[in-house]
Image (cartoon, rainbow, N blue to C red; front, top):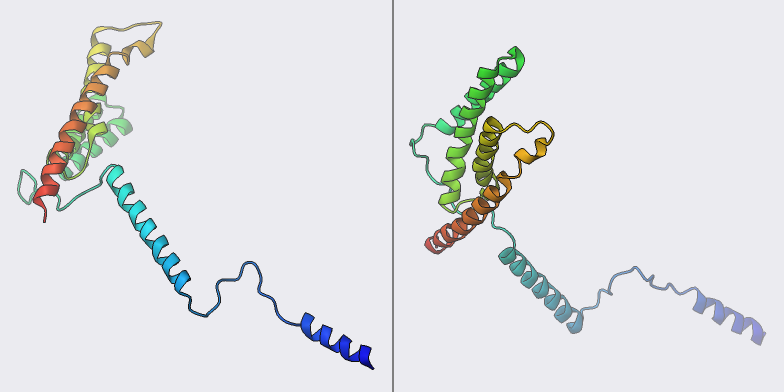
Length: 183
């Protein structure tokens, strides 16, 4: 009889539910848990602040106004140039293709210069590519290597690198001016 009572007690103990390892904290409030959660949240906020300070900044503030007032000249030029490029490709007309590309390029160049020089958004790579492509076009026009076509690109690399460095430096100054001006 004594063994039957002991067997019942053991079975009662083994029937208790146990918390799994993946279960969260108990519902009982704990000061230590609250302090730990607060410290983790503060650490995350500090990491986000330093990540924002280190990364390349995106757009800041309001977009700079157009030189042409409310008239969307850049957008119209990009659209017209795109139509010229499509017509030039479809009809096999190289003149329409070249003129469409130039008009589209001028539309893109207008708004990227405006945004870059005002410190709104950095367009260093795109703006540095314009003179580099011009150098490639000049080299291809006056020098036509038959065996080594990759040599046409070599003079454009230092032009691109120099323009990128100067444009990046200029953008940082413009951005500091813009951020200091914004409340």
